[in-house]
Length: 484
Image (tube, rainbow, N blue to C red; front, top):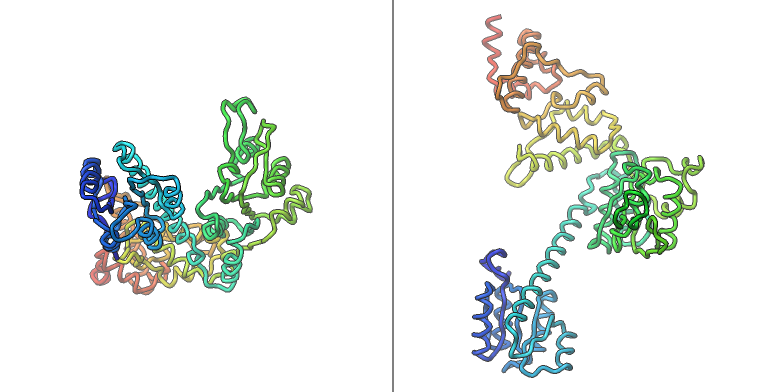
């Protein structure tokens, strides 16, 4: 592995290798570039230049066309074979159009004739290195996008989800319009992002549009843009989401909420790949892949006459149906682990050195999660786990941190806060939670005659979990039992 520069990016404008056999040229360039805060290395011939490139990373190479042991164009070809993205600027005292064209064809970024203009050369180097760094950052972000939204990161080992993954792998590279259907909270936008991230359009924009949250009178302008004066408040022209998404992907969530006029315009975009901004008479061409999502029954909407049948068939080229969480309960423990890891890192709480969460639900709490109907699907489970991470006071997370709505939906009720409980002024959240736990457990122990087994049943926690809490909260059960 070549070593990287010891200087940080903000301390140097770039690391430059000069390969030239003329000592005066090397010294002149080295002095100029070091004064401009470049980190400079030099080599006297092709062989030493290639050797230096093997040992270290550089942001740019200044390469002489005529070297004593080999042609600079041959060295350029070797550099391109090893690193296609490394900028190379050719230097020569014998500039001809033919040579310049040949160098550019072989992959040179530019061609500079000796003697050079110092200001122009420095500006050229700055711009070329800045462009390379921007391209590398874009590549890094694209790689992170693909990693974050890889199909492997959509959690689910159930057969229903495995079938979805197999379908996604087939359709992601295509240009087809896709309709993603499923109940609210099943992860439709996550799937749309994964399709985009694993498609040839990954480096282009992904533009999500929640059609249901945009006022009807603004939706058409939001999607297709408008020209100045198109309506009273249109004081200047504005690009719509379709124009912004050009070359990439637009994700139309809640597509079933679109009105008749917007449906007609969307149909034209799909059919003709063109649209007309509000208030304009000129058609705009657009290259956009359309992914749509709905939690409604669009077939029923078509039958009712509120959704265009021709638009439905244009959107529904490929249908990806996401199963509700209640139909894949076996994925709940995997999702819980995934969200524990994520929120433990975000909250810097109960997280080990390798970035894994130390939290886990106690058996009775996990049993409740497995039995719950999950009307809010994965999003509801995500919120439950985030709440558990925030409120957890031990690594074993009990029923007491679950939302009241979830408990009530399963016929349970949380023990009420002791009437006389008043947190001390200035107490932190963790201190308040700890004192509340102490008072609550003490009250329940007292009601159960200081019987820990009975108290664990009352609180619906494992006996081992209760005993851990009793020890951590310094509740002297033995003394209380003897006093009673």
